[in-house]
Length: 424
Ligand code: CO
Image 1: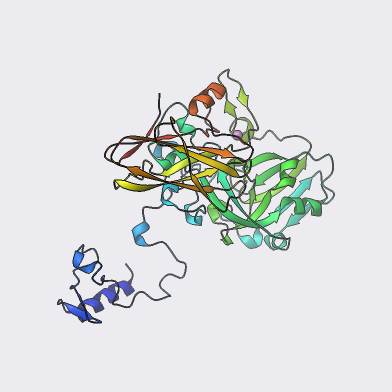
Image 2: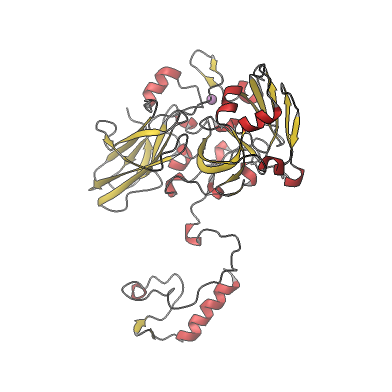
């Protein structure tokens, strides 16, 4: 606690002197400590935090969540963590509302730790099949026309541990390698115009400034369509772990391609066959061959409450909440089942419904202690429908880690507790 709060607590005790006091004609109970559950302090009585001056404006120059929200944090899975510098953690999507992920809760995936890039020394190089090879500072980038766009970023391995069966008991651990923020930055099509891309340029190698030298090949059509160099997220500078001071944004495509701390774009006439698109981020099929360049994150949805972390606490009326997204565009519809997929109801979709961005859905339901098997199924504007795990396994086997966008099942038990299960 801050010194200020201690002083405030002391002054309360001095004022009250351990006896009942009257504030504005209403009796208030004596204070016995901040955690006193004394119901006399609850409405219709005046709660203890009301009659006294609170903490002043200079207490936290950069605001932080209430200490009572300290459980809402990124978490990792120990056995998925080889080392902290080459690791992943997960967004606590079960604790969030709306569609925007707060910057401090966006999941992280690093291949060589977070570099400490000095913004004044940052440079973005453009080379290869261009008329003018260029080097931009961060201020140069900020002089281009700005776009502000909401997009989800999902790791290709989100849900990757669930291919063979239910494994991780948590909404955060099975769906939390996704986040959704508003990016501010420059369209790559504008940068390409400045550099003068030659007609023979078909691919771009995007390269990061981290110690892993993370790089991926991106086809020129995607670069010119909607890719961005972003320098802000949710209105403030990118967080260091999200690529400060600039990152590549590849809307709707797997997160591994969104090169952070981006230092170079090389234009070439063929894919670069980088490590992260040959040895990794390919999808092993049953016959031993692997799918390569599987970029789009197909339509997916998840019920965030109830979920393994969000038990049902009360009988009667409840509210189911969830998130849906598609790398191909907007979410058109989300259906929810509470009986393991036998019957489906269409959930309410909340606006704004944006392309390649998280979309919120809710559905009221009544619960009287019966067992539920909760599922959600998203459909996007192309008509694509989120598949069952059985359909996905039939098509792609069970050897893959990546691109599992299947329907999950949460089992609600008679106690209201919830478990990640596999039906059948
Ligand atoms: Co892929």
